[in-house]
Length: 589
Image 1 (spheres, rainbow, N blue to C red):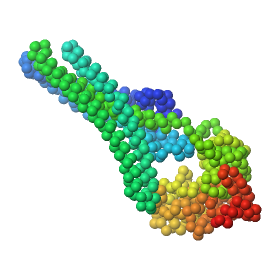
Image 2 (image 1 turned 30 degrees about the vertical axis):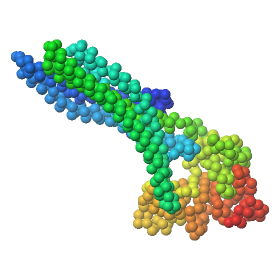
Image 3 (image 1 turned 90 degrees about the horizontal axis):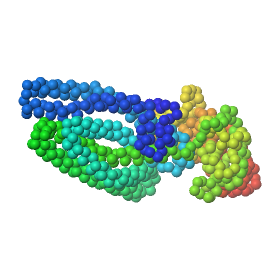
């Protein structure tokens, strides 16, 4: 379901960040009329529950104290009850339709808002946050909020209506019985207050442990090839079993407190119910009420007891739902986002980059990854970055894309500060081929054209040929429509990488990032695809990170990076001639 513009879900969290209940209510803004309509039909369809004790008492009184209107009274009360029961079918349908539409709107809207926010949050945030935790928030926490909405709207509405009707009818019949009924309320309040904090605390502990477990299970699945390759199955089983034991322990403590809570409340109210039966029986014995009224009062008191017990039973669910609202708010209220509003779009992109005295260190670390780094890359130039692992090459690529910002110094693109540019629009003109190819479950065609619309067959064919994929596509029964399994596990590493390269080629980018783009290819395939890459990068600003130095002979310039500094800069032949750091690295290979 499409959300209204301005995303009311984000507004709900920002406006009521200190109150989970107000946040929940605000989530339904724009759907209040549906909820009110649903509540009206809920009252109508639920009316037999309240009228039945009165009709039952009337029939019993008519039977036990015969009079001229006794038969008429029995038939009338019977007819009214049959009509009320029959109306439940249409009114329940209308109530469910209005209510479900609202609940599902919020469920879908919350998940869409979370997904939208995750797309806006910085790469740094995603590197620091385990994906399993995010998955738990999107699925489990939203489901808990939906359950909370169900319980508050349906069960709480039922509880309040039943208590109100029971007390209203009782006070109209007998003040003495009404006062007796009121005695149950303080008891319920004491029980709820005594357990509320402990239940909420246990729920909080259990939720956090579940998030940890979700993250660790996802890690385990990713590590299965490594685990099996090193014969570490039992070690991994032991590690995850330990985490599962923690979850079970937290769940056990939660179950115990909830069970203890429930049993005390149930026992208390059952005793009250027996006392009520004895009390109203005594009043009937004394002739202060009719015999049929004993059944009516007992029914209403049973209803009150059930409703108060229902409130107590709802407490753990409410605590869990409110905790989930807080958990969702942790993501939605996170301010580590890339802002694009008001920033300039580079519709005519040349691709001239300039690094001026750029330094960078990661948060919570004083180690300088780059220090006073200076480099100018001309439009259409291909520059290769080489150096030992940890020298800062990948950091430079992340700065080029705008994934991270310099701690100090300035990066300009076509003379404009990168901080003033709409990075989302810029990245639509950049193609990135990472060292580890990233594919999703779908067809080869869908993976190549990811995010593009109306791609012609001619453009597709050119990308396939340029990426040296023709032989693979021709060998598959379904060709480009062949399904790729999760992470592309039904393809070789080289095949996956060539699909990534085809994805870059078909975008016709202005700027190209090749991060060990041919690392997964054998020497034969690498040579065949190198010519295609040379055609791809022609007249386009290209950054190449490569450990295999033979692959960057055709780069316009090579920058040798060492401990965050550019220590050598020149063409392949120039650097080999000076016999410096690059010459040493090349000889080692």
